[in-house]
Image (cartoon, rainbow, N blue to C red; front, side):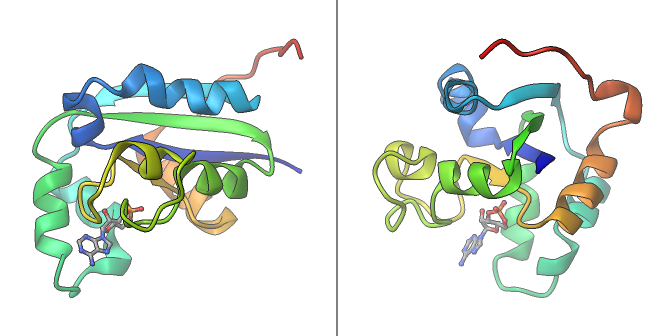
Length: 144
Ligand code: CMP
């Protein structure tokens, strides 16, 4: 089933100038970038996005990190895009993430882990609505 998911290239990915290489992972796989926005996340938006983590020991640091510098927010579409993107991202902790995944290839950290991807269809819908208006998500033909 064709799905659209939310991917965030976090401040560490932007600062380390990894945006192009990370986007290439999705495009090489055959997924489409249907929305893209370089933006600064406000504390309010970070709180909404990470509401499920409120109260956890890493929450304050996570919000501070995500609001510290710009992020690149992407809407990515394709067959089973939610699961496929999560597999491309790799495990949360860069130390445990397999080589060949984004986190496995570019980092060693759990907190500064370069990318976020929606973890379910419900999260994808909620998160896409937080970051994009309907007009900012596009449809276009793909050649395969
Ligand atoms: P993300 O996919 O954005 O979803 C929640 C984020 O919390 C996760 O990636 C990590 O960046 C962060 N996170 C999860 N667990 C920890 C942890 N134990 N310590 C620090 N950060 C964490």
